[in-house]
Amino acid sequence: SALFGHVKGAYTGALFDKDGYFELANTGTIFLDEISNLSYETQAALLRVIQERKFEKVGGTKQIDLDIRVIVASNDSLQDAYQNGKFREDLYHRFNEFTINLPALRNRKEDIPLFADFFLQESNRELSKNVEGFEPEVTERFIQYSWPGNLRECRNVVRRAVLLTSAKLISTQSL
Image 1 (spheres, rainbow, N blue to C red):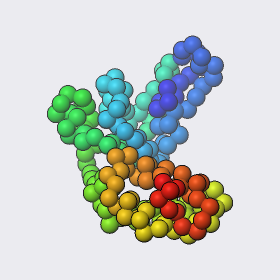
Image 2: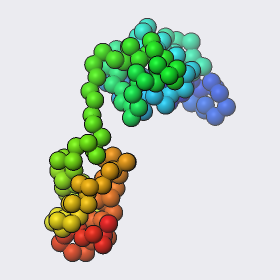
Image 3: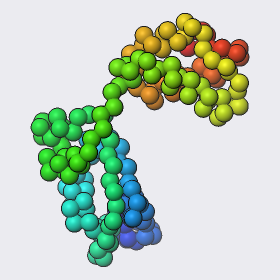
């Protein structure tokens, strides 16, 4: 229902017609994050839509033409997932026209201070604060840390530190 929409009465609680994400993105681009987590049934429905360039809303009978670009992301290797039987191989090949592999933050240590500064400025704006930067020990800890939560974790750590800081620079105590 979220992807394809539904018609009124399609299921209990469907009190009105609803457009899904594909219909809302028609003639544009849709971004599907964590694609490897989709159920096999949803993968099959997605494959049909991508192949046929049309779909029906849940409970509907009218075919809706689709002119859309699909961009997908996954923290897992889709190739490994299909080789292990967890992702449809035919869907993998549909999505694998162009791949961009982004290394984890822990493998891009030189970028960590850049991201930390970006998140600092973002947090200052959102929280109406005026923290100017990081003490050198904080930057060193950031570079040494493995960041298992990647950029989301980095953003959250910096944001929390900005919240807890009353000085000009974020210290290790704020971490």
